[in-house]
Image (cartoon, rainbow, N blue to C red; front, side, top):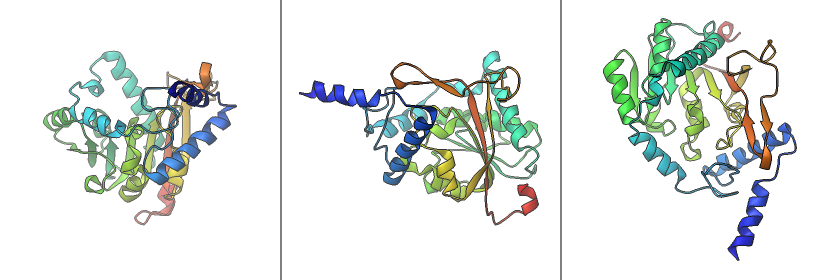
Length: 276
């Protein structure tokens, strides 16, 4: 009896999206519903995160435990090729914001791990640098090897972990904040000026539209860049093409990274000439 029901649910889950617009509309709707209930009620994962069209009640709890207890310093980028890629990503993101911020502005890296990217800000002359990450070993490594950074252990979202900042950056970590931790509420409480985000927009387990979520909190997207793996912006030679393409079963293959810069529309603490 369960087999036909399971097959029916799978057939719904694996229906192809009609177009890229259809993909974004449905994923945004899923995210809106999940944000309202503070829980992943609806899922369409092709990964092993959740059953079709329902959330996995143990997912967030298990993931948090795994992130806290992980011991591999993967995001210290010890491999030369990975380090080069990470530095390309940082420099590309920094180019979007460097002329908009002051050296004295407080920068918070959410999911900073060992502080690798914060360290790059430090090399650029920024001194007011903060980070938060749940991974105990990574935070200990950062505190021992980069004592000039202000990094604390914790999960972004709950109010007890709030850190006020002028600029908040997400180097891919925005996808790891569960609905129950109220991502957009936390950003609204903490950020004075800008939110800078790197993300694969086609990521299956992120049923949220950051334009919608941040728009409701008074942030607007003032810059978006979609790049090839070599960090060439779309529109330049060698980088033209779709951001993603559909594969069999309605799956989506990521082709490019997306970078967003959001600005608070009506901030209290900074002049309008900085917003230009």
